[in-house]
Length: 130
Image (cartoon, rainbow, N blue to C red; front, side, top):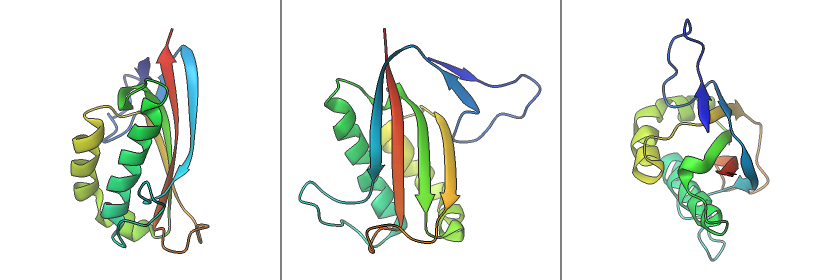
């Protein structure tokens, strides 16, 4: 896996501009802040993200993959301001669970999510190298 950063562009903070990878691909559907029993763990945005990242790690482990195998993340947030205002806390939680690996990422504000209690949903694509 190689992160793609044109030399004349500023370095992104907390994500990569692009990633190239070869291997077996894992697609993880949109995860929300549910625990293993299907109960929302927090009403708090960062608390939900913490659980989502843990859920992603657990699904990845089913394919013997780890966070460093993630090549792309799509974040769907209900409130752009809530997301932006949480950058510092999100960075701490992200590094706690995923370490210093920053795949290509997209974040978009959506009008609603299927689960009413969800503040954020994250989907992931990962690649296990050949």
